[in-house]
Length: 422
Image 1 (cartoon, helix red, strand yellow):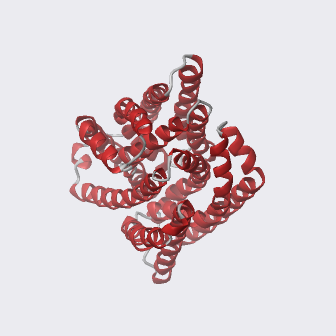
Image 2: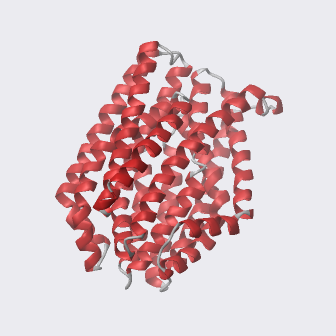
Image 3: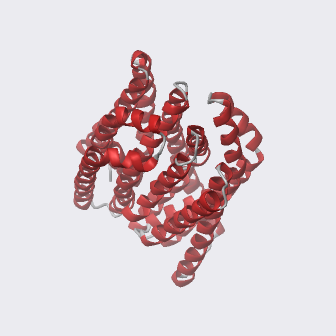
């Protein structure tokens, strides 16, 4: 899972680096805004993956294999309906997005081009979320690795072909993403079909539409959806407020957030392992194994977070230089680099607990702690530290991530004391 997750932020780094070596900072800003919009549009439906993983892991822990197949079918059906809805509503989504995010005319012009192309990958992206979640719930990380590597290798190669080779700009990056997403969906469907054919799963309409299972799926998905919207709102707010300081600061924040995203995806690989293992332990009613799993996830996550902080401290300057030729972007990025060094050790706890709570399907607690961290910590922190300008934004983001880890940790240990997990 580390390799699979690592390829995702590397793609964002390549996108930013390709734009960063063009003549103007607004190309990097446009990629940042376009990516931000699709973080909302697509990752707002991240519950399709997360909810699927937890439910499948628990059904397999209870040896209910046909229910795990029903979870896959339910998820794909919901994903297809949501994707069609997104395509039908794309003019409204674009209008809302660019009404909220205020940028320069150049950034908005190129970001709109990106949006109009990238939206067409919605069906591929959402259905792939479900399939990846299904395999993760089965403790099969190899298939998600193959899917993710294919998507990102195709995307990177097409980035270089379209932008460097053919002289395209924003439209080249967008088309590369769309083509890569459908390549990944094709591989995902093929690998799923091959596994189902070997496993002799039985299709049952009654089980597919079982009322209790449907109700549990929608409850889990609803709470994860609210939690994800809060997370995306925070990063959207961060990006939008950064844009108010000008195209250079927008580009700087986008550049540095790529390194935070790199760390986040690597730590998420341990969270994904936690989803499957914790779900299986709870489905099997194995409390001793559950304790060992949570301890191991925490230790591995903390170790890797420390390595990232060390790497950013020792090599941050070289990484910034590799990402952009624009001198003003480089200078300002060095000014904010200390925040990047600090964040892995602050945010590691929230990533680990996310995976643990998803595996336990305790998604209501995830929603509630996210609401607290967003509206009682992040927004007030930004408001009171506005006088620090962009440093105030980074401080608010740091406090937000710290609050997530603290609140989730408190609730988890309360569950453990009460013995209410199994």
